[in-house]
Length: 304
Ligand code: 13P
Image (cartoon, rainbow, N blue to C red):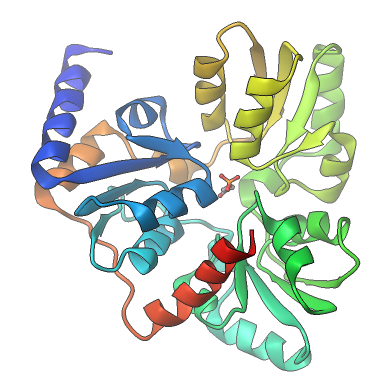
């Protein structure tokens, strides 16, 4: 780390104390942001920490829907998203209007909404899921029919592990959807003795051809516990930094060079520091959306 970065790193530590702030970083964040964070984790872990934190300020280094979830679960805290442009194309693939229309078509279905979604959509959903708990949450529901919103790939993965009828939404993560079967074949040829783990946001045929399917948190746990020394990672490249840091004697390879989410790379040390100096940009969710969106999130916490 250069002198300038070091100074910024120190300044952030000082500002954290000054503001009584906690810095949360998603597993896909830049290395320097992961290093300065108090907690690095997957969507489920970070939403839990946000809900339980006693800090006055939550700096969410991730994308917009994640900061929104923190603002819903911790409405008395200030939530900062260091880069306001950091969005999630998948979350934007569902709107309130489109979901209300679809609900009319399937009045008996329970609406299960991936955490990667806008607050207004959560507000009209029955329960939320993350990639780490989608299968167990769906299987816990007292319904035969589920409208799964908005990730069709995660929805297909769930459909393969439940007897319930899953109605899919036409949405996908542009980063994971980019991975093709040819990438899996090429990775197996390059590293024949490696195991392949992929995120359930990948296409169904990619998921089927992989050895294991995990959320980012699941991949961290797997890498720690497995006896495999070589692991091909089918999720956003930012995860490799943490995997390598925690498992220095193992080797990790990115499944496809297309696995980069530009939105996750918008946040850097400078923006984290600036957010803590200026206490901007703040993310809040107005009432009544906030209270309505809180219910499916809390149902998720109690379901698993
Ligand atoms: P995880 O919950 O596995 O961290 O996934 C979050 C995400 O946005 C994947 O694209």
